[in-house]
Every structure is written in structure tokens, then in C-alpha cells.
Amino acid sequence: DLQLKGRRALVTGSSSGIGEAIVRMLTDEGARVVVHGRNRERAEKVAAEIGAAGVAIGELAEDGVAEAVHAQAVAALGGNIEILINNAGGNSRGNTSKPPAEISADDFVANYRANTLGAVQLCKLSVPGGVANSFGRIVNVSSAVAMQPNFMGTNYSAAKAALLNYTV
View 1: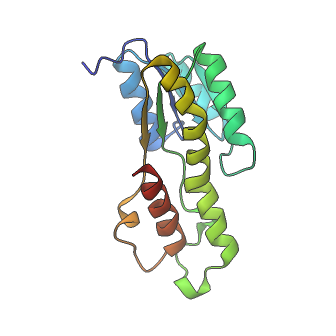
View 2: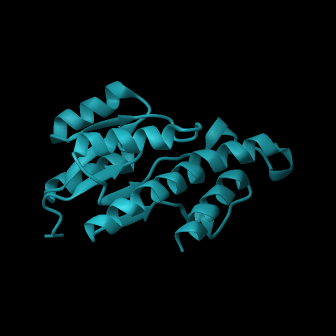
């Protein structure tokens, strides 16, 4: 028992994969969850299967979307987010096979936006609610490459390292 019964949670990138497993676990623990994703159909399917409070749709790498996702989650939960799991991300533009010298500055920025900026913005939006509730938990999901970068995909490694350092 993680003592999460009735707690309100948003898990980004939860319409599949690791994020989906997280929302299923939180629901099993009694938390009220919002499923987030870029694809409404997939997010609604997961939400229906687990009895989620709702869905929040949006690409967190885009300007202003973190604010919209936060607002959707708060509305669906009927109150402030108490548990935020920033899981959304991935290697933007599919350029993991390029050596570092061939990765453009635009590719670095795209990965930073996809893996760091949306999470940072959601943290900033969620902390005041956690403080007001005297309860708040934030988990930012990074990657092993944040600490041990590989040669291919240095832009993804750098973005995950930025998220890790922000979290610390």
C-alpha cells in the first residue's frame, strides 16, 4: 500500500509503454489519474481500460502545450495535481544514427524541447498546487544515457542530462 488512495495524478506519455504501466499501477493503488498522450484515441483507450479520471492531449514539445495539458488534467481531476510523473519524451526526429558532428543545432533544440522543457514547465505549474495541498510528488523520468552518453544520439543524451540536473 503506497497510500495513494484518492490522490490526483498526471502521468505524461502514458498512452503506451512505461507511462501506461505507471498509470495502471497508480490506479491499482487507488489514485485518480489522467492519461496523457499525443494521440487521443490511444489515450482514451487506456483511460477507459483503467477507469481514469480523464485524458490530457498535447505535444509537450510545442509552445504553450504544457499549460494546456496542465489545465486539462486539473479539470479532469477536479483539483490540483498531487503526483506528477514526467515520462513523455523520446528521441526527436529519429536521428539516433547520426554521429555528433552531424547533429544540427535544430536537432539539439528539438530534443531539448521534447525531453526537458515540457517537463520543466509542468513542474513549475504543478508545484504551487502541491504546496497548497501540503502534498506533492514529482518524478521526472530520464535515461541511463543522461549519465553515460553513447556516441550515437548525443542530442538525446544531453536533453536527458538536462532533465536529470533540473531534477537534482
